[in-house]
Image (cartoon, rainbow, N blue to C red; front, side, top):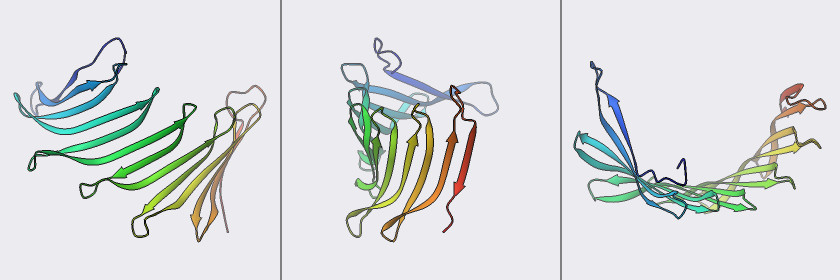
Length: 199
């Protein structure tokens, strides 16, 4: 949505006809439902079978928390059962307008199941200091640590060190690191260095 004063109800997408300079209808995106700020709550994508025949292809639904999207669900149309089938869902939570967790679900067999989730930490000025990625283990029905990124900053708020670690054998292990050196008043770092951890 570009402007809250206006409601975009649909978008027409055309494609070129091979061997000609003409175009033909390809997709139509219809915003079917809006919230009180004119943000779309339900979007349906239709495909043109013929220049006049539309069939549903995909549906996207949204929920919002303040200015942020808190829930996103994507579904595909099953023409055999004539029903919407989930593809993926993304759930975000916020504190003080900052993203603190992000959960992704996938539906490989038509039913949404947990896949991955991220957690975020910040300093008092709102800079991200840690991002942790976990993967769902359906065999043990538990979340397992995969990786994390830790970031430190200078007193001026410039990024200083960024450390990436992998979780293995019950502990966090270094993999790579980047560092930035800043001269007073500079808008760009004077030195950037990338390092790889060697056991």
